Length: 285
Ligand code: PAF
View 1 (cartoon, rainbow, N blue to C red):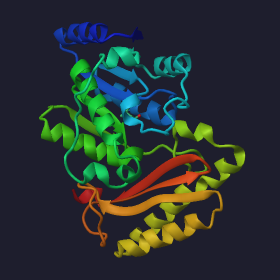
View 2: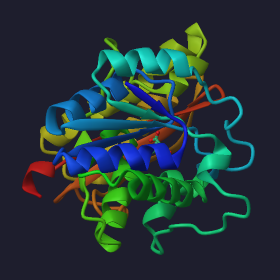
View 3: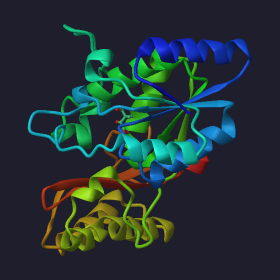
View 4: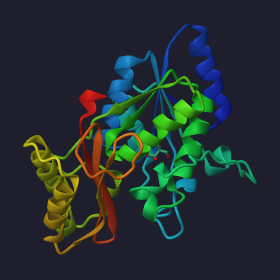
C-alpha cells in the first residue's frame, strides 16, 4: 500500500493507473477507522481496480467548540486495517497540504438541505464537508466514491453536489454497520465510558422501534418520531438534539411516511453526540 502525503503524489499515481486503463475508487474518511469504514473499503475493492482511502481530519467541517482537537487519531492502526482490506493508496495530507494559506473558496449547497437535521446545530458543517470532498474528487478523480448511510444527510448532500456540479462520479451509499448489540459503529463511540456505552443503545433501539412501526403500516411520521423520542427520553444520560422524519432526497420535513423517507436522529450521550437513522421506501426510488 502506498502512503501519500502530498496532492502531487496522489495525482501522479492515479494518472499512472488511468494510463493502464484501471478504474479508481475513493473512500473519504477522517481516520480512526472501524469496521464501518472497512465495509466501504471492501465494497470499493470489489467494484474498482484501485482503491484510494483519504485519512484526514478536516478542520473546515468542525464548528467552534466542537471536537476537532479531541477527534481520535491513530494513523498506524488505520494503515494496518487498510492493508488488510486491500487498499492500494492511503492519502494522509497535513492541513497545510489541503488548505493553502488564505484558502477562502468553499462549496456550499444554497438551499435548506444543509440547514436541516445536523445543520441546525452544526451550521458550517456541510459547507466544510462539501469543500473537502470536492477537493478530494479533484485530487483523486475517482470513477466511484463510497460513503456510509450512517451519515445519511451527508450522503444526500454529496449526491446533490455531484449532480449540481456535474462531477460524473458514481456515489455508492453503503449500509450502516452495527456492533453486536445494535450501536452504529462510529469513531466517536470511543468517547463513551462504560455507563454511557450502555445508555447509547437507546439510539439503535429507537431505530428498531420506528422501523417496526413503519413496517407495520404506520403512515403518520409524527407518531413514529414521537414514539422514538419517548423511548430515548426514558434514558437519563441521553439528551435529544433532534429526531426527525424528512424527505430522503431534499431533507425537507414530512408528515406522512410516503415515498422515500429518512428518519434520522442526533442524541447526546453525556457530552458525545451520536447519530443514527433508517430509511423507508428506497426500493420505490
Ligand atoms: O464522513 C466523514 O468521515 C467525513 O465527513 C468526510 C466525508 C470524510 C469528509 O471529511
